[in-house]
Length: 179
Image 1 (cartoon, rainbow, N blue to C red):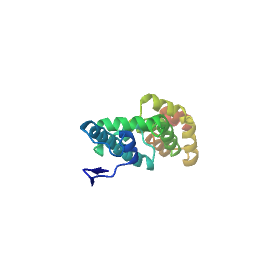
Image 2: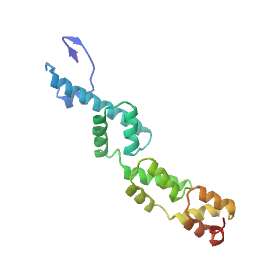
Image 3: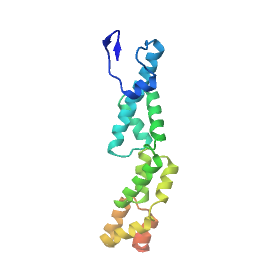
Image 4: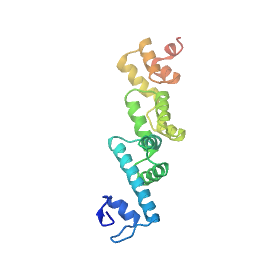
């Protein structure tokens, strides 16, 4: 882009298109405001897509990441809406995948719930993700089979967020009632 006949700045094609810039257009104050708004939006989308390149993130964490990158609040909301509409930001998908991953690594429902709520996932989506998992008692039984029955296994399961019902189902009533 040239300003007063001298090279001024290179702009992304998407910004040029969204701002309606054409060759020979005089840049008035309103056009410059629009151009700046589109540049902020493009910057926010760039930061967000770089963050999403490595792994899926919930909307809350992505918004925090954009805030840390000093992206304007209006641009944060616009970019999150764009990414949500494109299907790149989906808290329900994130919750289901994260819950399945944690369950596969031997975590109980309480630990999974704590993790997802800490990530900023809505309680209704957390409940849906937990409902989609294999029963907690079945996961606990599998861990008991691998580790063996005993107080150490009971303490291990409790530390991994398994509830009393799952402990009782996997270890029997005698372990569940021990102090």
